[in-house]
Length: 199
Image 1 (cartoon, helix red, strand yellow):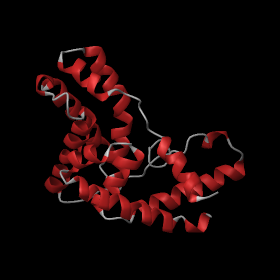
Image 2: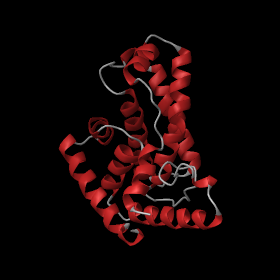
Image 3: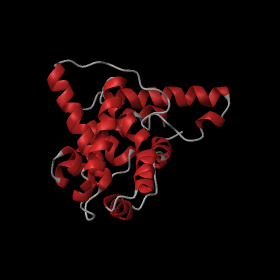
Image 4: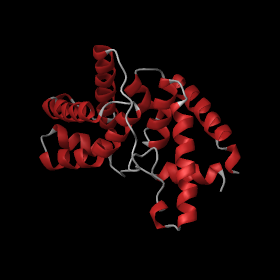
């Protein structure tokens, strides 16, 4: 099993297939059904992202709830030409940083198999030997990504695992697109080198 095979599996996890612009337009006009769809399609992705940022589950729940409430309350201010998904992640990421600044401590939480970071589609349909291989690979990926600098791991998760564009990730993290590109290149290099033993 090659790293490219593993990365291909990871790349297809978490895709929503949403037309972000159309959804933003509908939410802006007060379409509650569209907002509910946006919530359902993004809640799990956002939960996994915050868990990987080591946000405690109870705090993450509050952050996510407040982020969606903020979007609904400010729906008339939504810019249809900007990514609503990036706006959601930016609100949540900023509030997570504020939480850590306020508490001045980091709480380590465990990531379960439903996290987009660790989910490999089809892994539940294999035999015991393949499941053991997947567990080893998931654990190795988790350690590699946890060892990256904060911004680099955030860029990798947003762009590669959550499938945000570089522009969207730049909006979320409040950095330039070039910075996102540089972090992504370094993150992919780190992952490839770390997964070399699985070739």
